[in-house]
Amino acid sequence: MQFTASQIALLLSGQIEGPENVTVGSFGKIEEAKEGEIAFLANPKYEEYLYKTKASIVIVNDSLELKQAVHSTLIRVPNAYSAFATLLEKYQEFKSQQPIGIQEPVHIHSSSKIGKDVFVGAFAYISENVTIADGVKIYPGVFIGNNVVIGKNTTIHAGVKIYFDCQVGDNVIIHAGTIIGSDGFGFAPLPDGSYRKVPQIGNVVIENGVEIGANVTIDRATIGSTVIRKGVKIDNLVQVAHNVQIGEDSVVAAQTGISGSTKIGKKVMIGGQTGIVGHITIADGSKINGKSGISKSITKPNMSFNGIPATDFTSSLRNQAALRRLPDLEKKIAELENAVKNLLEKNK
Image 1: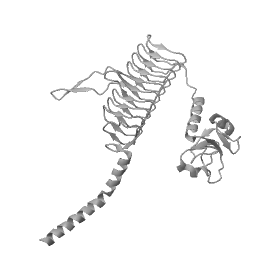
Image 2: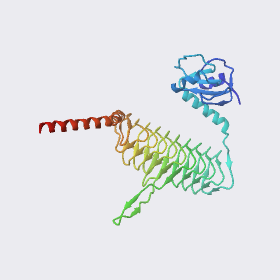
Image 3: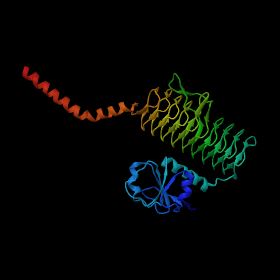
Image 4: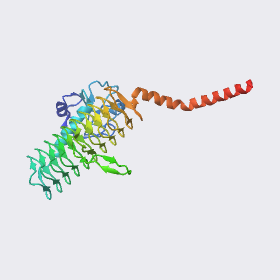
């Protein structure tokens, strides 16, 4: 299906520069886009491609000052990245015509309650006393345990497992292979050096608007709840341990591990492959660089951290600069040692 520049500008509340009747039918990256495609420019590093792209339409920031003539029709918006995301969402809604109905074979226990306009894919298993609200999409191979509650318009992709007593809010997306509510890592050491399993009788609570990537594991609490607050976004391959709390609108990148009973504040950004020890707190607005190791609480909000063990970003940069100077310092120390040795020999 084709859309004109004027239709897209109307949707995005943008201003057009160039022919308004040019049409596009698909998306492309600005450096690779072809005629008939729409692209966007948000990162200044890619500005050079604006002047040679073959894209028919390019979404740009209002603030962009052109250095050369462009051949594409421009749509200026306050935030090009956000506007392009909006466009992709609308396109996805248009293309994805999500299914409704219950495929066969499935198992749905007679005590479970299923809302309106629900889709349940083949080989899904829905246990006792499950409550599934209106508009939920459950794709093939999903397991939902006893007493689970799933809110409106939530999407659960293939192969997800949600253990007993867990709660999932409205408009949540859980991607394939994720496991919600597996046992927390609780073992009590015994005098003979072995370990006794501590029963994990809590649950996981996922609030509204959360998105969880593929192959994520979120462990149930020992007692109480592991809580993922509203608006949180979790990337693929993340481990969230028992009794963790992640605050509203925080984001966690891939391969991060969060140990038990850690409390993460609101709007925290955690880079990939970060390790966080247990029983600490991380203040609102903290920014943690990838591959960092967080070994103690972060108490001041809106600060950036980096390194292993992590320090504030400025100190981390100083440490890195000092490390780069170590070979020169080693050489100077050797020279000083030789000079001292020579002086001592002369004094003798």
